[in-house]
Every structure is written in structure tokens, then in C-alpha cells.
Image (cartoon, rainbow, N blue to C red; front, side):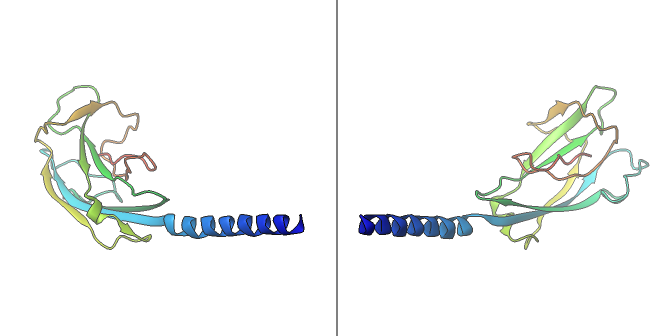
Length: 151
């Protein structure tokens, strides 16, 4: 009886130890960075400080702790060349997985290049935004851990 109880405790201890070791390797911090330049036909509009400069340049980075790989999507909301239609134009760009790196600070930056926001993209959508600010930059993971990028 004592031998069976002792063996059960050993097996239980080893299972907990094994689970702890596997789990410590599975959970890791991942990060990503994106930069680019946005163009719009109304150069007199000032962008809000801290989000992008007057030329439309931006650089974003963020990190999260996940057990699985993160799928990062850059979402751009804007009203450029849009008239008085309700809501904002919404464009989504999937950031390649090769730019997601381990650790809190990204080791690579995905340069999305210069985007002329007068362009109508095939996959473009419209969305009503509650935020009254016209152009803001935030960061978004596809699994909605952080809010959207808004211009």
C-alpha cells in the first residue's frame, strides 16, 4: 500500500514538473513594428501630435505575451477623398509573420512604404468610428488585444 501511494506521488510530481517545463517554453513574448508614410490630398490638415508627423510618417510597435503565434494586421481608417459619406474608409494589411520576433522589442521593422490614400483598394471596407478624432494612430493585433490603427 505504501509503495503504491509513494509511486503515485512520484508520478504526479513528474507530470506537474513536465507540464511546468513545457509550459515555460510555450509562453513567450512576441513583438512587431511597422512604419510607412501615408499621403492624402489635403496637406493643410495637421495630424495630432504623437501619432504621426505632418508628412504622414508613422512608426508603431507593440508586444504581447501569447502561447501561439500572433497574426498582426495594420488597419488604416481615413476619410481622404471621401466626400461626406458616413463612416470612414478602412484598409487592412496583414503584416508578414517573418516580422514578428520574440522579445518585448521588435528586432525588425516592416516598412509598408508610401500609401496614397486616394487609392481605392479592392478589399476596402467602410466603418463607423465612435472616436471623434479625425486621424489617430493606435496599434492592432488581429485578435483585438489592442485597438485599431486609425487615420
